[in-house]
Length: 198
Image (tube, rainbow, N blue to C red; front, side):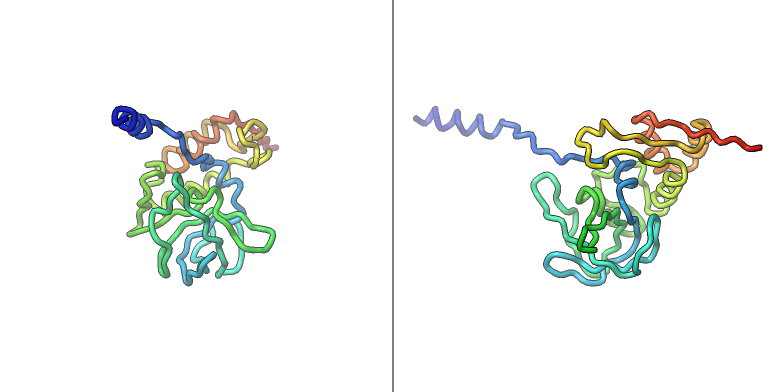
């Protein structure tokens, strides 16, 4: 009987349950977000927090918005406790009731401490908030997303690039976040809109 119990305990401890968060690529997160903002938490309640925006990267809204607190789970924990004064960069979608929600939970809620992004799961190319916000702005000027954001395997999506690939790679040398986003979008083989001047 002891042998059976020991064997069972050994097998249970070695099983891999395969829990893993479905990570949405940042090129799609940026495209899906109706609002990308930098600011601080001004008030935290049970199900949402009030957020004071200091900079708009994409979209426009009031300078104070309410954001739903997403539910943590085994494979998507919050890296820090939400508290008043915490600086965040948020990638938000708008719910039908007018409240905002982070795109793909933790993917859309980036903590900023001492002008750095402390999340170890972020791409290393997102070196600091200034570089990230500039890279996002460059990406939005260069790429347009077409397709279904909710396509589980991203089969029916397409990016359109409005600059030549040579211009894009030249721009990518100046910003690591933009380079990461370009590599991410180029995976989907974007079409290119040729611009002709008369």
